[in-house]
Amino acid sequence: MPETPAHEEQAGAQDAEDAGIDPAILTQLLPFDPFDPAFHADPYAVYRKIREQGPVTRTPLGLVVVPGHAGISAVLRDNRFGWGDGATVAEHFSQGPDGTTVRPFIFMDPPDHTRIRGLVGQAFSARRVDALRERAGEVVAELVESAVAEADGGTVDLISAVALPLPAILLGELLGVPPEKHARFQALSADIAHGLDPSLFLTPDEVARRDSARAELYEYFGQLADERRAAPTGDLISELVAAEDTEGKLTGHELVVTLTLLLSAGFALTVNLIGNGMLALLQHPEQLAWLRAHPDEVPAAVEEMLRYDPPGQMISRVALADAEVAGEPIAAGEQVMLLIGAASRDPEVYEDPDALVLSRPAGRNLGFGLGVHFCVGAPIARLAAQVAFATLAGLDLELETTSPPRAPYIITRGLKELPVRVAPAR
Ligand code: HEM
Image 1 (tube, rainbow, N blue to C red):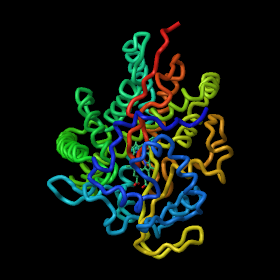
Image 2 (image 1 turned 180 degrees about the vertical axis):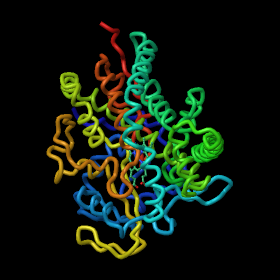
Image 3 (image 1 turned 45 degrees about the vertical axis):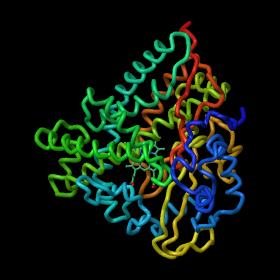
Image 4 (image 1 turned 180 degrees about the horizontal axis):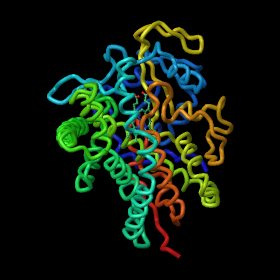
């Protein structure tokens, strides 16, 4: 089955004018046109051309672009690349509560990064995530049952019915957000998720919604942290509060910014892994049939979905010192864009890279990053996707349209909606 063809349904995709940018500048800055619907329909064709230009290319405005698996892996393992003084970190990311400047740890370099990452890593223990597995199965079963009822033999949107609420509920339960707050939590997560791209690429409305959602979350997490400080419950917030109290390691502001980061970083990408993966499965009926015949292979199938259409398409870094990638010198201060979406289709690493092959041998997937910033939420994201596909694969679904509308972002890649026809239970 071919890639989703270019389509006209990108009407919702914003254009350069909406975002108040001169489109000519963007084509000088980036290695692709972020407002081109054809790019969102099939970025992999564009990435292929960039990869074919060599392991390192520079855009006319000097952005260093690394599209290959080997080059990206080398940069992510190399401590000469990081975030530095933060000049390249969007200001809004560093805006802590009360206008303070507190950078989330995803934008820190060691040793500051190591300190906070260590505390969060402990709280994200395998035990805590594993304990959610049974509950995750129940949540998916309930969501899918409601989705089938909503379709009533007709159509339902799998993004709003399953992909969005599942991570909101699981992340809410993991962090310790009470159930009555989950709907609000989902709305705020979505507003933040829509604002992950640099402000330059967003409409004023998206920027306003992102900033107001972040402010509300800071306030809300601040209150929750106070409650847990007074009466710990054993949830992740209680654990992080304890880490703060015993050694004075996490300040109150750092805690609130870290909790908001966990949500911002985790929510959209998990939604998109489920959405992109489900679209890929429905576009490849023979792969769906294979998955039904091999239910134990769901974890491997999720890794292939992550490779085939990664929810996180790129990672940024800055050269902290003079360095080189694939023999190409990179000067200190140069900004580097690592095209994860391109690396995931690198023919040097993957045989027949444009094919979805759920039984593909496990390889070094870059979808969760690599090195010191490797995704701290990977276990919970994998869990959510695995339980979702274990249940969704059993339904008799058909795509309502071969090209459901894509969200027009560049860092994350996902669907606005995924309408499917649900056959009545036999
Ligand atoms: C399918 C879902 C997900 C994908 C594809 C994904 C992808 C990534 C990637 C590529 C990075 C590396 C960023 C870099 O090197 O600059 C990362 C880091 C991170 N992710 Fe995820 N992520 C997912 C889900 C989650 C979830 C569910 C959470 C939290 C609950 C989360 C929290 C984080 C955090 C906090 C970092 C920063 C880690 C650090 O700087 O040490 N992610 N993620």
